[in-house]
Length: 639
Ligand SMILES: Cc1cc2nc3c(=O)[nH]c(=O)nc-3n(C[C@H](O)[C@H](O)[C@H](O)COP(=O)(O)OP(=O)(O)OC[C@H]3O[C@@H](n4cnc5c(N)ncnc54)[C@H](O)[C@@H]3O)c2cc1C
View 1 (tube, rainbow, N blue to C red):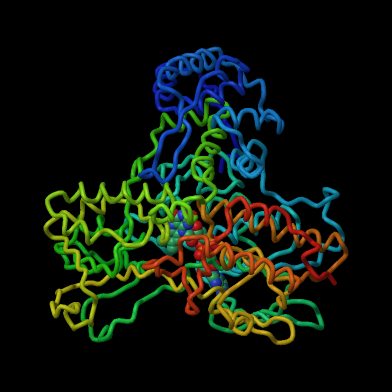
View 2: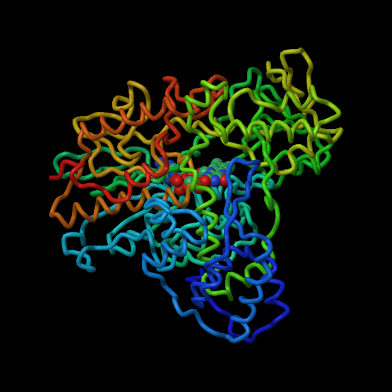
C-alpha cells in the first residue's frame, strides 16, 4: 500500500509528462504548482464554477485561456527535476491555498474536513495518547470490534496504533464486508474513488474513477495486510449476544465459532462495526417456494451459474438493480425488469471509465497533485453542506417544490429522460418519480437507459402478484416465463444491530430502548444504558454529503477519542447522559422536518416501521462533523 507521494526519479520523459499534464485539472495543477514553486502568477488566475451530476453540484475550474500557461509552467518545473519548496503547508498557508483553489472563502468546517481529505500528513484522523505513550492502565483494557468491513478495519488499524488489545469478530471468511458480499456483475461505488477511500492510505492507485467491487475488495484486503490486522480477526465467527456485566463492568459476549459451537468472551469495550446492509431483503412473493427456476438475492450471486441465453427477471430498480441490469442484458436472452416505483437516474461523467496510466503518473510525479485532487473532489461534494435535501419554505411559497437546486436537478433529469425516449414519452413518464431527487439515493446511470431500449428488455410496472412454477404473474394477469429471478431488493436497513441481542444496564434490551420509534443514538454512536458501547454507522448517521468511508473514519475517531479520554482519566466506564441523548434527538427531530425524506411518495428503507426516518442524518454535514470532531467527555457519566 502506498504511503504517499512517490516521485519516480527514473528519468524525465517529456512526452509522458505532456500527455499527463494534458489530463490534469489545470485548477488543481495550478495550486499544486504554486505550493511547490511559490510562483505568484498562478495565484492571480481566476476561478469559475461548472455544474456536474445533472446540476446537483458544482465545482471550481480555471478559465480555459489559462490552461496552456499552467501546463507550460508545470512542464518547466518537472523538466528541472526541482523539488517542492513546501512539502507540508502550515494551516495558514493551507487555508490560503484552499481559498485560492475554490475562489471563495473556506469556512472552518470545510477547512478541517478538507485538510483531512487533502492528507498532507499521515493519519489525519488518527487518535493519539496525550503523553504520546500508552498508559499502563490501557495494557489490560480489551476491545471487541464486530465486523471486518471498512469500519472494522479502520477501528482495528487505529486500535493497533494505540496499542490497545483488541479482537475483531467477523462472520464472513474474509475482510471487506459490503465489498466482499456484493459481487454481482458490474458492482461498483457511485462516489469518486478519490473520495471513497480511507485517510489511512495515501495515493492509492485506483484503476477506475468509480472503483469496481473487485478493486474495493483488493483495497480493503491490502489494508488488513499492511496494518497487520488479520492476526487479530476471528473469521467465520458470529457474535450473537452481548450483555453488560455490572459486577465486572465489562461486556460478556457470546460467539458462534466456525464449528458451530458457542463460546464466551469478555471485553471492556464493544465497537459495533456491523454495517447497515447485512440483512438482505428477499421480498415476500406469494408462491415463491413453488418457483422451479433459480432465485437469489444480489448478495448471493452464484458465480458458477451462467445466465447467458436465459430468461432473467430482475426485481428492483434501485442502485443495485439499475447497476447490474445492463450487464445481465448483455448476455441474457430476455430480461424482465420489475419496477415497483421509478428512481431518479442520472448520468455521471467517467462512471465506467478506467483511470489512464498517464493520470496516475500525474499523481506520482507532480508534487501535491494527489492531495489537491482529493481536496477538490471533497469540496465539490461537500461545499453545498447538504443544501440539496433542505426544504426552502420561501421557495415553496413561490410555487417551487423543494429548493432552487433540487428543482433544477429534477428538471434537468426529467428533460434528459424525455430526450432519451423522445419517440415514446409515455414510456419515459414511467421512469420519472413523483418525489424529489435525493429523497432516495440518486441512481447513477450505468447504461440503464441504453439497456432499456433493447428489444429483449422489458420494463414491467404492474405490481407483482405471485410466483408460478415458471415465472411471475403481475396484477394485470400476465405471466412472464423466467429461468432465474434476481432479487435486487436491497436490505432491511432499518434493523440496526440486528440480529445481535444486546442487553445493557439493568437488563434493558435494544428492543426496549428503541420501542417508541425505532433506533436512536447520541451522535449516532452511543446510548444511555449501554456503557462502553460504540456504534459505527449508527442510527440517523447516513451523511447528507459524500461517501461513507470518510464518515466511518470520523465515527471511529470519535469512539476511540472517548476510549482514550476514559482511560487517561482513570475511568473504566463511560455512558451517555440521558439528557444529552434526549436533547440531541430532539434536535434531530426538528431538523428532520426541514428535510425532504418525509415528502409525499418518498417511502424508502429510510423510514422505519414507526414512520420515522432513522437512517439519514437530518443535520447539516457541517453540524454533524462538528458534533463528532471530538468526544466531549462531559456528555458522559464516567465511573
Ligand atoms: C451494493 C452496495 C453499494 C454501496 N455503494 C456505496 C457507495 O457508492 N457509496 C457509499 O458511500 N456507500 C456505499 N454503500 C454503503 C457501504 O455499505 C458503506 O460505504 C461501507 O462499505 C460500510 O462499511 P461497514 O464496515 O460499516 O459495513 P459492512 O461493509 O457491511 O461490514 C460489516 C461487517 O460486519 C460483519 N458482521 C455484522 N454483524 C456481525 C456479527 N454479529 N458477527 C460477526 N460479524 C458481523 C459483516 O459480516 C460485515 O463483514 C454501498 C452498500 C452496498 C450494499
